[in-house]
Image (cartoon, rainbow, N blue to C red; front, side):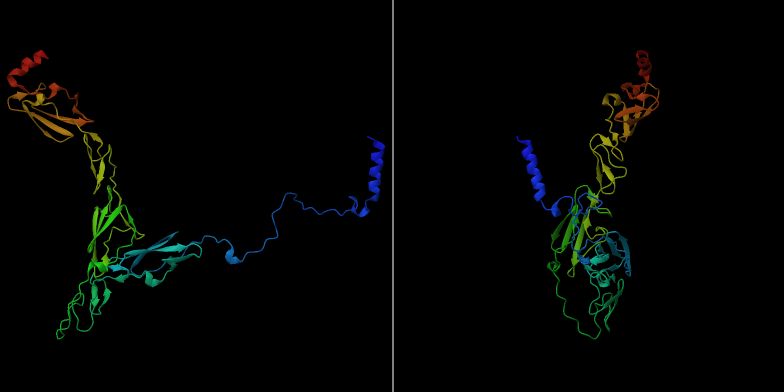
Length: 342
């Protein structure tokens, strides 16, 4: 390589490059203090309605006459007092909280007082012939009409024609959610059966809902606060043990070989019949009394003995586990000879 020639060539290039583009004369670029890549700053400002909203709590607590209102973060539950019901016939409804606006809603819309108004209940028939239910079970009748439901016409008025028969088909199929239960419609009735090992909160496993005057007559005590029909798991306190099944009323049904309030005790078998040849026995699975027949006696010189069941084995109090000779009855005249051989 011709090193002097290369050196001269480089000097030539430096001479022909304009001074305004050399590194020395170029303006220095203004760098930010933070030399790390920075986020894009030329974004457009979004309108306020497009910005992400924050969850708002519904602080409103409706004041509903003749109702109990219970509120929480998710909304409020309105439950009518006894002898009051809503226009839909239900005892209570949920008002859900719209957390984007902080307002209570009913069926997806802002709630209105008429949606949850608790009205006096005058029975399935209500008030007939234009009467008005002004108090629970009290109708205000039109002029000259009488009766608990204004069913009696004025004395001088002709009897009205017979009311048309309302067939159960006028009741629509129910739309309430069902939890741990099965609902079957049979004509004018709904038959509700709880799933195995479940019961209603008021007890029982079967309920009937009647269709009357085109509306379902919902009984109290089988619906949740959210309007769902629910059977809850049976609970025995304390719980059943050893595979026992909890029955309605909180009673344990124990499998074979177990007994007791919680099926926690192992059942004892009856003592051998050879021990009881001259005795009578009676009692329960946990405690029995053995009594010798007249003219007979036990080795302990007693005519009666009580035995207790402990974890599947019979125990003689203060003596230990039962053995054959403990409760065997001998004739009085043979007892001494038996003792001499023991």
